[in-house]
Image (cartoon, rainbow, N blue to C red; front, side, top):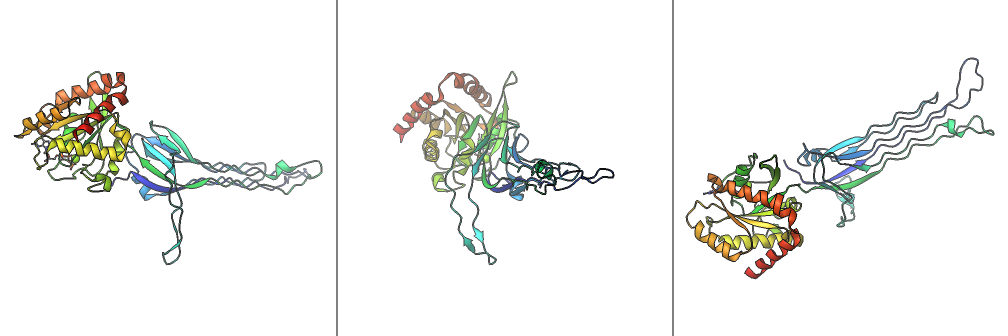
Amino acid sequence: MFVDRIKIFAQAGSGGRGCVSFRREKFVPKGGPDGGDGGRGGDVILRADQHTDNLTGLFYEPIIKAKNGVHGQGKKMHGRSAPAKLVKVPIGTLVYPAAAPPQRDENGDVAEMSVPDLPSEPIADLTVDGDEFVLCRGGAGGKGNVHFKSSRNRAPTQYTDGEEGEQGHFLLELRTMADAGLVGYPNAGKSTLLGKISAAHPKVASYPFTTLHPVIGIVEFGDYRRASIADIPGLIEGAHRNVGLGHDFLRHITRCRLLLFVVDAAGTEGRHPVEDIQSLRREVDLYDRRLSERPWLIIANKMDVPGAEENLREIRRRFAGVEVVAVAAASRQGIDELKARLEDWLFKIDKSLPAASKASTQSAEIASTD
Ligand SMILES: Nc1nc2c(ncn2[C@@H]2O[C@H](COP(=O)(O)OP(=O)(O)OP(=O)(O)O)[C@@H](O)[C@H]2O)c(=O)[nH]1
Ligand SMILES: [Mg+2]
């Protein structure tokens, strides 16, 4: 199972209560107040972890509670503070405040509607391994009666309760962190390609929607340089209206610096690759304008199939100004050339070029081909 969006409820621990106690010892009459303080409640902390790749853990445990602090005790003993509850989340997790789910009565009917979630700004974005965010802060411990002693009240019975821990509903959303993302129709050969340029082994098959969730592959270049590439499920026209697997997965390429549009250059499924590219660009644009302004290039795949050469010429003509790399992923043809071009884009050209200006000239060209 792959979970990349989930609502959770988190509750930090409350502080322990302060203690009321008096020192009672042989030969020490009127020993005075000696009630200790309560311990702090535990925080609920999210930590970005490179070994966690999705939010499935939270699907099974959507209610996260940290322990309460221990109450204070006599002899000025402080209660123990509760440890923080650490929750590992994948790198790239965004945290949003969320509304409480609707309240249901005993028949399961909605008794009280919740306020719908308003689109809100994330309160945290955990993008680096080890990043931590305190989701709910534990309550401070209460004070024992030892604090209330004064010249007029030598036997105080006052104490304070511990503070309540913070609690709340949150929406966690994963936006995979990768350098480049593969976008294409189902069966274009994205997973085949990822398998050839990286050590990843995504499932490859001749039916559409083989890939059901994002897969990240690491491409190794020379000099210990590496880049991560995200393979996402195939997109089809109308994805923005939730046709096919919908465009929800495009979220996983929103952080990529470079978008790789993979097309079946031979048009083996009866569609023309030029139209494929146009409709993919349109879907990306409908999803998020800023995403369609990212630097992009075209990977013309299945060059081993007759008819691909002719289509490739047309792709080059219609998308003049956009780099087109021709490959036959299944037989590894053109893969080394593709890796060299990716290295250029990701390590040389990309850093020296202002990404936005490069991209905007390219989108203008697309607009004219529509
Ligand atoms: N002839 C030929 N077939 C290829 C090539 N690359 C991939 N294929 C075939 O195309 C089919 C689909 O490949 P996948 O890699 O699963 O395609 P995908 O784009 O990941 O598809 P989804 O995951 O469904 O979106 C498989 O049967 C592959 O063997 C190629 O270069 N030439
Ligand atoms: Mg695939």
